[in-house]
Every structure is written in structure tokens, then in C-alpha cells.
Length: 230
Image 1 (spheres, one colour):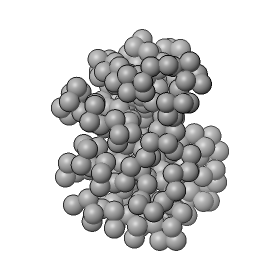
Image 2: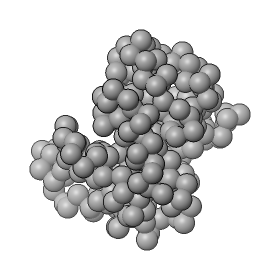
Image 3: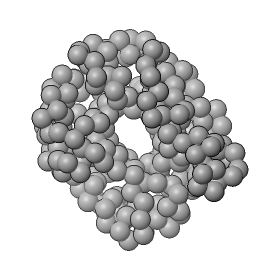
Image 4: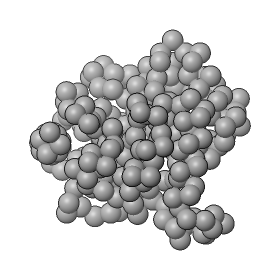
């Protein structure tokens, strides 16, 4: 896909550290993903800061709670003006429908996506929590449920795309975390991919964190990735 988007994950707890990374990047080349760690430490003001720098924001809080709570949380998140937010598909249909209702009540039409199975999970870790069927079984069923609930896309490993792409709507967002450059460590991820393979498999958005943010010149790393993806 020619318009493949990259979101840089700010995995930090300090407002100062977040500002430092943001100011080294350029909104022409990426958006910014804000997760639980940074949002809990800093709060909504980090969203305002990023917006003032003209970046799109992916608010990655993975809401998973009773339907009414998730509905209100998603409306509040959309009201912040974020480009994209997400919920856990394991919360079920009623919760996801409520999440969509919450976003629809906002004046900002945020993209709402569902998380299937975290890329830190593998078959063994699923067995530890009593999910004994093959991991692809759960990913496929969860992704179909996300689509049936009218959400806009799914978060999934690049390894899952061959299974998911043929069964999901044509314009569905396929957001791939666990992206590593060729020589990078996996860290706490299990199912990882490099940017080029993720694009070939059908990803429409990539989430890349430490491979970019831990480099002294993150913008140059980002530019190199974009060149390889053309």
C-alpha cells in the first residue's frame, strides 16, 4: 500500500523525555503513539502538545471494561481529537458496539480499532491462561468480530495478515506493532516483523518504538525506513 503510515511509539514515563523525542521527529514522516505508560504519567496535556506539533495521535490505551464505561472512555478519548484509539476485542461484541457508540457521539471522527492477541503472546503464554486452541483460531475469530461490530480496523502481528486480509473488509485498517529493524532485539515481543515484510503482507499502518526512539537521530532512521517502503 503506497500510503503506509508509521506511528512512533513513545515508550517513556517522562514529559521531558517525550518532548525530546517528539522534537526530533517530523509529522511529514510519522504519527505518534501514546500508550498507558506515558498517558498515565502525563495525562491529556501530552496529546495537546503533540497536536500543537502537527502530528496525528494514536491513543493506545486498549480499553477493556464494562460496556458503559468503555463507551464513555472512548467518547472522552475521541473528544481529545486523537486520530485513532483502540479497545480489546476480548471485551466482546456489546463492549465494542458501545465503544463505537461513544466515538460516534464525539464531534471528532476518530478511527476505532480492536486489538486481537497481543504480539507479546505466543502459543505457550495463551495456554498459561487456559486458551488451548491454536493462536490463529482466536486471532481470526476476534478480528471477524471487530469487523462485524463496525469498527475500523484491527491491531495484529504481520504473521497474522495472510489469514486476516482475505476475510476482512477491503478498506479495513491493519495496524502492525512488533516492528523491528533487521538487527534489533525482540525485547518483550514474540511475534515480530521488519517493515518491508509487514508492508508486503498487507499492513496499512506500522507501529515502531525503540528501533527509532533509542537512536541518537530518530528522524534519520525514520527516513531510511520510509525510503525502503517506497
